[in-house]
Image (cartoon, rainbow, N blue to C red; front, side):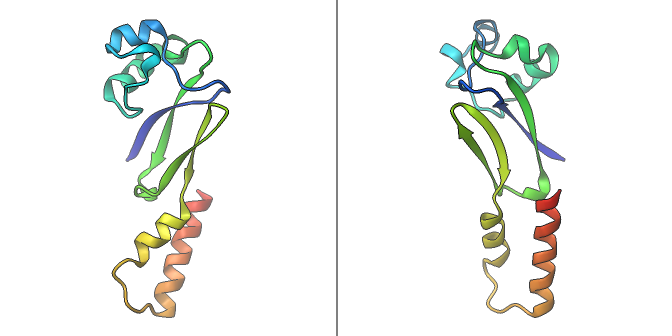
Length: 119
């Protein structure tokens, strides 16, 4: 299973086309719609990026593996977005509530982290 969200993969920033905004009943350029909105994902699946993308956007669906378990973040530079694994958050989640770890448990956590990070 994966989590799906819409991101912009072009410099310029996330925006929806006027047509997509009409279909989704959202504000100018889709600023008030969640990236994981099932209606947006369905529209992207049905009509594609060209129909949904605003003037300076190229939208795509990013699939986030369940193994990342909420330990991901969206990075943005000049409007270009990507989804990255947040290893620090993942480690913290593994260690919460544990008083002492054996060497075997530490090795297992490190091996799991490396497998997730390396895909």
